[in-house]
Length: 327
Image (cartoon, rainbow, N blue to C red):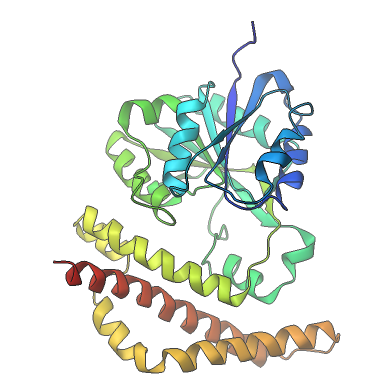
């Protein structure tokens, strides 16, 4: 009889077959004995070679399991993974992150130190060398803090639900079984923080454990990130309407969003074009090994910030108007 694993790594994926070999190779190279973990891949309706890639790793990762679902979004895929998981600890992984060899072992160590049902664990994510110098990725993971930012965190910090970040957090499976799952209305964005907010009623605390490391290996273009900000804005509006309390209205940035977008809307195309022009200039300059002045970097950061802010308000207000149009 196959013994029960100690931790289930839940990998949700959609049309990222090109990244999966590196993801799976990193999981195959874990310091934790392979009999002590399983990898549950939930394929959210991919149309590429995802299934074929997974099949190629079954002999390399004995605890690898695969499930396909009709495209339903990130929250539904994570729930699917929780239902399939056999271990008492579940770790959520992104399909464009490579795990450090000690990732699974470090999550287990932190849970053993913090065994209470309400304790979750937040690991650390940096970028692989090939994308670390990308100006956009440097901004969104550094001074911008749009993707993830750890600058104010210290090892062992006990954090609120706002740090229950998807793709780098683990928790006791029983916590979800007892107190709630991800809301499938969230196809992209806010599904993790919204669940964390609900679980905070049951004393959820997130322990920061930077020794549990992953590295993001997919670089995003400016167009990618603007789309991400719009989708995030749509989810923020949905989140705010599910929890009409001051804390969430502030967190989701929906207060005065209509007025903010009315101010930005006439300028939006110009804001997006300016950000693209500066982004292109800096990238071209870097490829030619030319010196980039500090004032240019500051201008690029400001252009990124304005563009992402505008795209986010566009998403919030677009969802708001859509709701009222359907009444």
